Length: 226
Image (tube, rainbow, N blue to C red; front, side):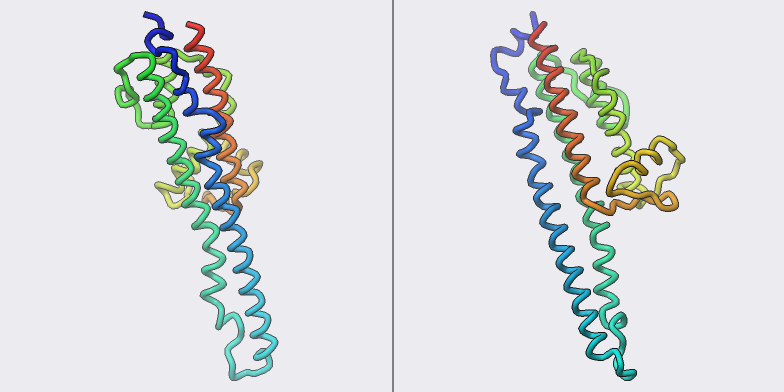
C-alpha cells in the first residue's frame, strides 16, 4: 500500500510545521522578550535617577550613607536579572523545539502507518533521535538541512551547559567557540556561557522556524511523490 493511500487525502498534518503555526507558537515569546527588555531598561533608568538624586542631595553629608550603600542590592539584582531571564527563556524555547519535533514525528509516523516511535530508537540525544526517526523510519534525505542542523547542535551544547552544568562548558570545542564569538548576544568568559541580550534568543527562534519550514517542504515532496 502506498504512503498516499495510508495517509488519505488530508494534508492538515503539514500545518504542524508551517510558518503560520510556528509564528503562532513562538511569536508570543518574542513579544514577551521585547516587553521584558523594555521593562528592564526602564528599571535601569529609574535606578540611575534615584542614584544620582541621592548623590546630589546627600553626597556632601558624611553622616549619610552614599548612594551605592543605599541602592546596592537593587543595583546588583538589576544586573543579574537579565541573565536569569535570558537563561530561563532559552531553556523554554529549547524545550518547545524538542516537543514540537516529537509531535511532528508522531504525526508523520501515524500518517505513514508505522508502529515505530521515537522511543523505539536507541540513543539519549532527544533531538537527534527525532532527526534519526525521520531519516531511518520515514526515509527522508535531510542532507540539505545539514547547515541548519549543525547550528542547532551549537545551541544544544549551550543549552546543556546551562541546564546541567550552571553554564560551564566542560570540554573545549573550537567550533563552539567560533560560534559564540560570531553570534550576537552571547559571550563565553572562562568557559562560562553568558546570554547577555535577547538577540541570541531571537536568532534561535528564527533558526527553529527556518528548520521546520524547510523540513516541511522535504516531507511534503517525499510523502506525496511516493
